[in-house]
Length: 287
View 1 (tube, helix red, strand yellow):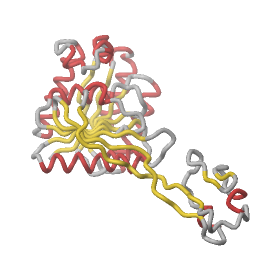
View 2: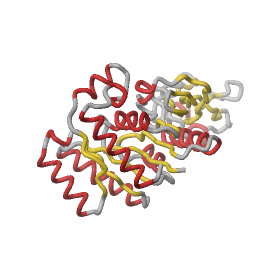
View 3: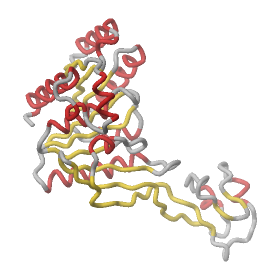
View 4: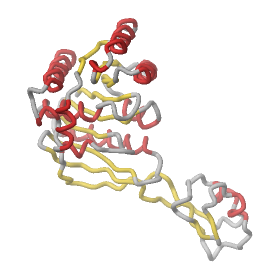
């Protein structure tokens, strides 16, 4: 089983659009949307949810009014102002545990709270695992791990030979969770100065975890000088450039229609290049 994560240094580079198109070209794949803070792959794949799993991340402090002696210490020390009149505001509580530690009569306890949901769904292209983190909640890295685990289980139980992961943007904890124990990372980059900087950060991250980086330059023709700079960087670091996707307004039109560009127009300039990218992936990983 091959696991490939598609990442980018920032949001909006076309990562999800590329993922949806590659999924449309595959035929034995499990799809995992690990961008749990702002998931949108489901908008292009239209999954039908078959199972919902509660995700419990941050804990919530709760005060036992029968034990509480109204000393006021918890309200005084809570830096988030989450306790008022000896009642914890669940929207303000960060689950740090200080109030539990300092309460002299042990009247405060931690309870689990639902911070989001993971979903197992069916799509026209195969099973999909995705998730939604509730607004204001944290531990998205832990939710990413849950999505990855479920996707791997489905792949193993159904003899799927590829898990294709739409990863979060950036280089933080959720991205690290999406990169654990994978075969390769496809880094989607746009030819801008900030894009080159983000690419360097993403490459450093993959190198740190000994993951094969593969680069895809999206909208490569909007700035040829920066595209050449990205080519030089990849040549210097001996990184394979999978493809150069041209600017194509069919991609935007496909998004409006809630489709991948491959399904919207398989003969558009972007679709033709994405087919070449898929062919290269097949050559590298025999998928």
